[in-house]
Length: 481
Ligand code: GAP
Image (cartoon, rainbow, N blue to C red; front, top):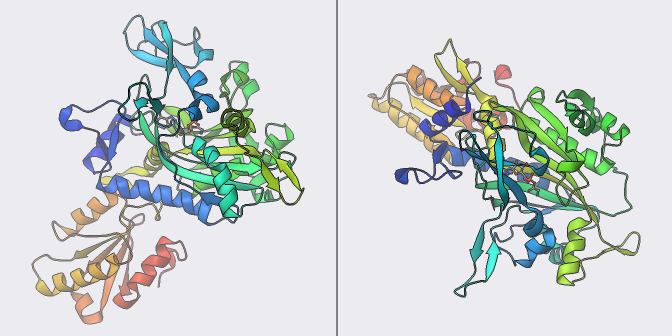
C-alpha cells in the first residue's frame, strides 16, 4: 500500500492538493486544492448533496455563516467542553493531543517516550468582531450549530413536517495541537452533515428496509474496547438493533451513510464501525459510532454518526429564551424534536477515495486512478492521433468543443498516444477519445476505457449521449456495440 507521504507527493505532482502558502514554507494544518483537486472535491460534495438532500422529500439544506453569535458556543457546550489534552513527549519533545481517557495510557506515537500533560486546549479559533477589543467570537468547529440556530426560521418558512433533516456543507476550523497525516488532521477543513429531527416519541422508522438491515460491516463494540481489545466482528445492522446499540432511526442513517460511502467507490472491506465508549462520548451525544476507513496509516475515523437527542435545541432554548418547539400537526403537540446526526469530513472522504482508487499498473508502467466515474475530475479526454495533420486537429477540436458544453473534458495533442493515455490514467479520466484517419471518412472515433484499456469505435453523433450513459452507469463499457 502507498504511504501517506507518497500519496501527498502524488497529489501535489498531479495538481490535486498543494501545501498552503508553500512559497513561505507552508503552514501546518492548511492545504489548497489544485485544478484537479477542486473538481474531485466538488464532485464529492455534489454527490453528498444529491444523495442526502436533493433526492429526498424530507431534507432541506442551508448555508449558515462561519462566525455566529458567541452565545452559540456557550449554549452548545463548546466553550466549556471542546478541549483536547495537550501533551508533550519528554523524550523527543513532539507535541500531541490526547482524549482525556487516554492520559497515562498511551506513549509517544513518534518515539514511544512518556507524555507530560501541558494542559487543556480549547480547539476553537477565536477572533475579534469589529474594532472594539474584547468582542470575541469563534470560527465554527462544526456546521451543526447553524442548523440549530436556524431551526425556527426553517420551520416557519419551509413547510417541513417531522421527521425532517437539515443539511449543510462548509468550512470548519479547529486549532489542532498536532495536525498530521496530510489532509486527515488539518486545522481548516470541510464537514458535510445533517441534523435529522424526529418526534421524541417516534422510535419506529418506516424507511428502514431489509436492504438496510442486511448490511454487514466490521463492528467494534464499546464492550470489546473496554476489555482492551480492538478486534471488530462482522455484524449486521439488524444485529446492532437486536443488541440495542442504537434505535431504528439511528440504524437507518448509519446504513444510508455506509451506502453513500460505497457509492463514491469505497470498499466495505476497508470500513469499520466503531462504537464510542462511555468515557469518550462527546458532551452532546448519548450514542456515537465512528465510521473508520483503512488509510495507509491505519483504520481511522472517516465520519461519524451521533444521537444528539434533544441536547442542542434544549441548550439554545435556555440560552436564547426563544421558543424552539415544533408544533406537530399529527399529534397536535408542541415538542422538542430529538436529533440523529450523520457527519462526514469531506477531506477525509477525499483522501479515502484517492487511497481506494490509487493503483500502480505494472503492465502499463503507470498509476491508474480508478475513481468512480461521477467523481473523476475529467470525464473524457480528446486526442488527435497526430499533432501535425490539420484535418485530424480540426475534427478533434470540434469534438472537444462539443463535449465541453456538457462534461469536463481535456484536449491533448502533445506526445505519443501511449503517453497521453498514461497521463489521463494517472488522473482518473475514465474515457479517452481518439480522432484518427478513419474518423474523417466514417465520422466516428475510438473510445478507450481507463480500467480495461479496451477500445471501441463509436459514431461522433452518438458520442455525447453514450458518454452520458456510461458516466451515469446506465450502460456498461463492455456492452457498448
Ligand atoms: N457535528 C459533529 C462533529 O463535528 P466530529 O467527529 O467532531 O463531529 C466531524 O467531526 C467529522 O469531521 C469527523 O468525522 C471527521 O471526518 C472530520 N474531522 C474532524 N476533525 C478533523 C480535522 N482536524 N481535520 C480533518 N477532518 C476532521
